[in-house]
Amino acid sequence: MADLDRQSQGLGSRPALVLVDLIESFTDPDCPLGCEADGVVEANRKLLRAFRGKGLPVAFTTVVYHDEDQARVFRDRVPALGILKPGTRWVNVDARVAPAPGEPVFEKCWASAFFRTGLDDYLHGQGVDSLVITGLTTSGCVRASAVDGLQHDYRVVIPAEAVGDRNEEAHRANLFDLNAKYADVLDLAQVLSMIDEL
Image (tube, rainbow, N blue to C red; front, side, top):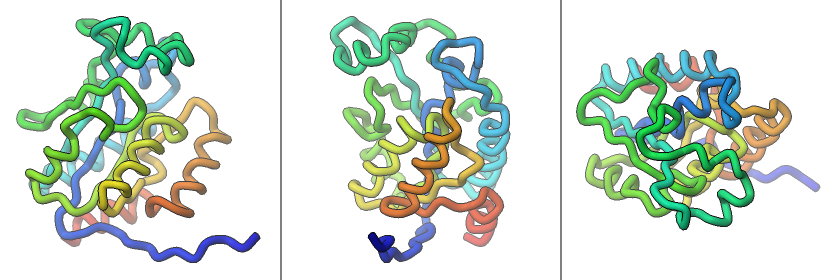
């Protein structure tokens, strides 16, 4: 079967950076949910400097379960999610990419950064027309957020070095699939250059 014809879309005039679940439970390999993510964190540090330097919007997500009824099917599927409780270190954004004052952290219970959160309202309020989506994990919450970003009519760019996964094969396969249909998957240097040129 022939590959799909597609058009690279890049970024608009006012992109936002959405850091998906760069929280301690995912960046600490000692956590059942975690993996080695130092390179992903460092790539996000560079993106944060670029976005903040241009005064562009930045938003974070975390996963928090306040009661046993939230996302019951998802949590039954992945029991390790049960550690993501309020007040634990596991739900905190990794200190290496800590939010600056005024940068929101949206709590979510499912994969997508958009599903039952205030993210889309925030982005509209900031006049955002495109997204740079980063974080963990490529095959899970990053993918779901990128697909939903497209479905909310944002152009989506994913810097390959700024996302990661516990499974390298899943990481590569999902970047291939995302680039085929839903987003522009680019090198970090390309994305930083695009931000610098705004």
